[in-house]
Image 1 (cartoon, chains in turn purple, cyan):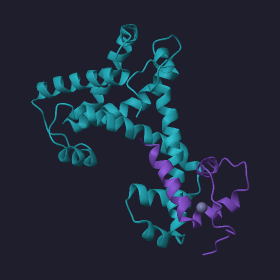
Image 2 (cartoon, helix red, strand yellow):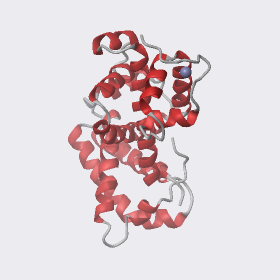
Image 3 (spheres, rainbow over the protein chains, first blue to last red):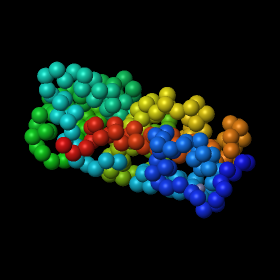
Image 4 (cartoon, rainbow over the protein chains, first blue to last red):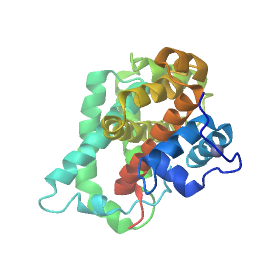
Length: 55
Length: 200
Ligand SMILES: [Zn+2]
């Protein structure tokens, strides 16, 4: 798997996650998508975000 | 789910002149719900369809008095009308056991007998109906692979790793496809229920 993360600390915020979830991009989508789909930490946060919305 | 108060603009329009379109939309949303609940309670399909017609004619006649009462939810009101008619019907025919939708039957058989059993089923069906309509809206907007990943994991209950293997995607991609479709369904369902369920 190609991890194009130069800095391990650099994850994304909920605003970017929301753009990612709904395909409403204000930023470069490809880098974000590649990061998220290879980053368990961001994936966990996104899953929590989505699950919280059912509550 | 939305809160119980339901004085919505669309419900307000149901008995206005030239409200045929709103009325058709209302029937589209609620007819399958009334039919499924009636069948789950033991009516045959044809009887459930007749009963739905009866429910809607009562709603049409009584919407003004419902609106002027000013309390209670529309959903609860519709549920009471449906339940009363189902009970009448079953008493009339000494309760034939309907064939019903097998999933609903299965779900029902897993529930303990409770007074609010039908109320829960009604809410569950309403929720399912909203999700179904949301799915119809969202599906054309996402990539087929993304939809499949969502469907196989969330609906068919397959494991992330199995689905990743069968679609030739990474597990992360499958996990995120499920999240993306779910998020869009949530937004679409919220918009739909907002049309019929929010406060005025
Ligand atoms: Zn990350």
